[in-house]
Image (tube, rainbow, N blue to C red):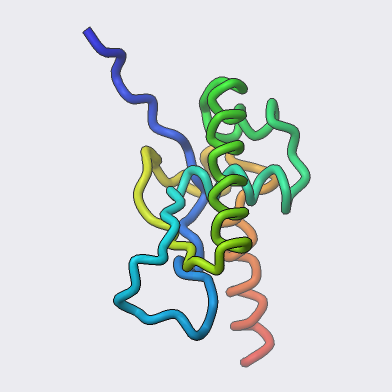
Length: 125
């Protein structure tokens, strides 16, 4: 019997889910699909500076799982950049975190977004 899917914890969905060359035909088949959990590994490791081990704890999976997800994500980024393909971020095996009160601390993008949106509201008052 197959092992049940272990959902990967993700802090939030990307603000933009489509990236690529501006001159691409919208109906083109020149797309690279990246999953939300692949995006999260790129965000945590490359942007936030987490190690693969720290990223694995954050996403609630094994380090070897993060390593595989991260390698796939980097290949997809390279394919998109080198071949001029549109990168679409959607799907995957993930669950959103419940925010700062749920044990999701440093590196939680939801926490950062909430802080920035409240600062913007304060400054616009």
